[in-house]
Structures are given as structure tokens and as C-alpha cells.
Length: 100
Image (cartoon, rainbow, N blue to C red):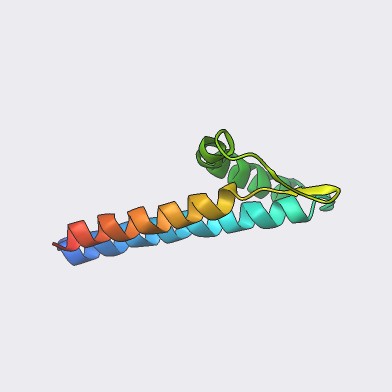
């Protein structure tokens, strides 16, 4: 059985799902930065490396232009927030253009 995107609505649904998956991966990357002492398991390490390799090139675009926000002894990285907002807006525009 082959599933083919035959209408613009199904293509738009697939594209919308891809944007959503990428936003979830960015959220997982943020959680990874909060929990730095994760026990080592080979399968977990493979998943975390995948998330890093997929999201870091996109997030590094924003990290180049946005310095860390210093708060007391620590710092807050706002680039995932901006990257997610921009990805959401672009995703909505693309999906609406495909819908027609």
C-alpha cells in the first residue's frame, strides 16, 4: 500500500508536521541544556547526538547575532526562543501558501 500526497491539503499537512517535529526537536535541545548530567546509555547518547546535529546548525545562526543574557552568575540563551518563533511564523506562511 502506497500513500501519496494527492492534494494540496495533504502536502500542507505533511509540511506542517515537519515544522512541528523540528520545533519539538528544538524544545528537546533546550531541555538537554538544562539537564547536563544525564546517565550514559548508548541508545540515549545516539538520540541526543541526533538532536544536537539536527538543531545546532539552525540555532547557531541566531547565536552568532544574539549574545547571552547575563543574569547574576549564569547566562540565559534566548536564541532558541527567537528561532522557534521565527520557525513557527515561517511554517504558518509556507503552509498557508501551499493551501492556496
